[in-house]
Length: 430
Image 1 (tube, rainbow, N blue to C red):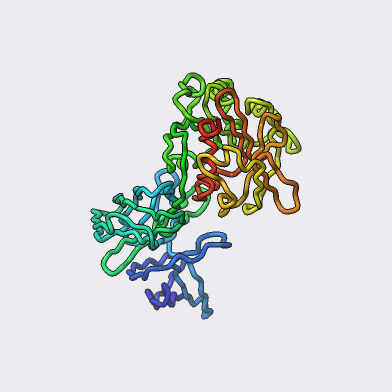
Image 2: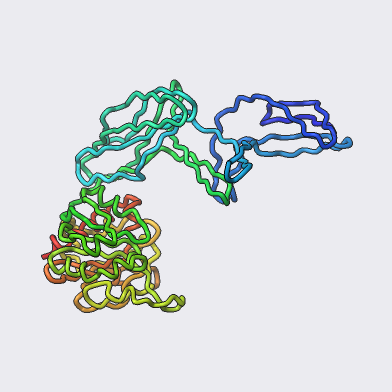
């Protein structure tokens, strides 16, 4: 058997070697590799190899050609011998730590940019590529990174325009004549091949006027969401409430308490201390309850009664949802304080939503609750159970099944304005 060539691309590395029976042939060679653009991954079962070796052999006079990915073989102390595909990464990677930044007023906000070296000491300049109407201080910053793996963080003060506007900012690192505006992210689990991505170093900037009256918020995390960070972006002070906080903590220090998605499904400590939360509302606090999944019904889950007393008055959660994200919204009580204070809510606040309007709307409720808006999927009946409001004692209670856990992290301007009204309900609606 004769090994005719081994090549990467059009670079011949080895040629003319003979292969002895049952003996490996090993050769070492160096290649200079050009930067490679990451190929599109959509609809592919796995990430294709960035580098491949082409082997051409002659076996008994018959040519055989096959291609293999270039890999790195190494030994893990726990998992044994492993193989990882060869990756080409930039000299430095650039990333923001937030998918979007909300500017509720004209004041400047700090934007952090993270730089990491992937190839020894690096030095250059870092700047933000901003659209017209936005500015930052400083305009650029010099950076020096001592070695591979070291990361540095740089802060820019970004000032928005006065008018409402959404924009995208890119972070650009310049090393000599090269500009780099990508990060490096690795998806790595034991049951799948590692996948390295090179996302653009960009984040969304959202300038929208938002006023919030409730500044101190207690948040009961449910199945996990990013609403707490969204509330921090509009100036709220967030405390994540533990089981001890719910059982014995001083809830009067909060202006409002918000329960996260599926919190009543997943937090028995929340259900056990519902009486304390109702007392908090009765004494003047605001409580906002996001969607929960109904138990029992056609899917066979046992009904544990976890949603029996979700509000101060009887309230039943159904399985209705609105899946079309731009479904028209009808204002049932357009002049209600919850829709007018501190932010005047209009149809424009329901523009630019993603994925859906809401899920698990209330299907039945006590007359003391006021439904404020309704929407529906095409050809279906209006669903008014997505936003219910009631006064209870001196405070206010709000049930909402709209998908704030999607819209707020996505930087939807109207979602911030509406949710600010929900947490401000006890102070605004008298």
